[in-house]
Image (cartoon, rainbow, N blue to C red; front, side, top):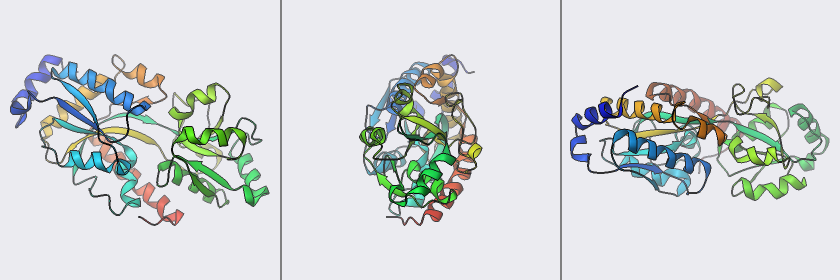
Length: 316
């Protein structure tokens, strides 16, 4: 792993970076402050600032489902000083649901490194009779009037994962959009809402306290964080809808800049860095580099496109 001194020396010689060394490394987080992902962004910026030997800040540029922040980074100088801490869905799902997205995830950005992955989970209330997905589908079929589920919003990964679960399970589900997971918890706990889909990190503490039960994940396979929760695939429903966050640079950023930033991220989120803290928040630390991120982006974009088509959703 490159030392701090070698990273500084190499970065200082790269095109455009000599002039930028006095400027802080700016990581744009395109969502509101205060959540778990925002906390990871702030921990990461502290580590990167130390390893690269330069000031580093997180800037929250919120609005339009992350578009405002993404557009700000797209228009930034390609010198490695401005990066986007993007949710994977901005790059693989949103292009299929938003005709006014305003950017091309492939042409306008270069992946730097994946910071963390996370599973989405299917949650039911503590008193719901279903113990697994088969039981939930039986429960839904028994009363068409109760065939609803919730997610943190229209057009989210959780929205389409829930619809696809119902479609493959032979149950047409009605989607109920909430303004985030906390707003849905009272309805889920009371039984007014039969099912909710959201990230594991959002439900981890509630499940541990017995306020909800988690009966499936949308991961391809069980992770360290969700080892006790079967995947949808294990339960006969072929839905894979992983979530992740990755750093992106503007298109045109030199290969050497990307490589050195990727090495710094891998070091920051590794076992000797933030890995344990990220895992404690319900995420899976990653650190894989630009090639792996680009491959995941291609594969998952195709998968999400198929789910959006199957749902009948029409881009806004």
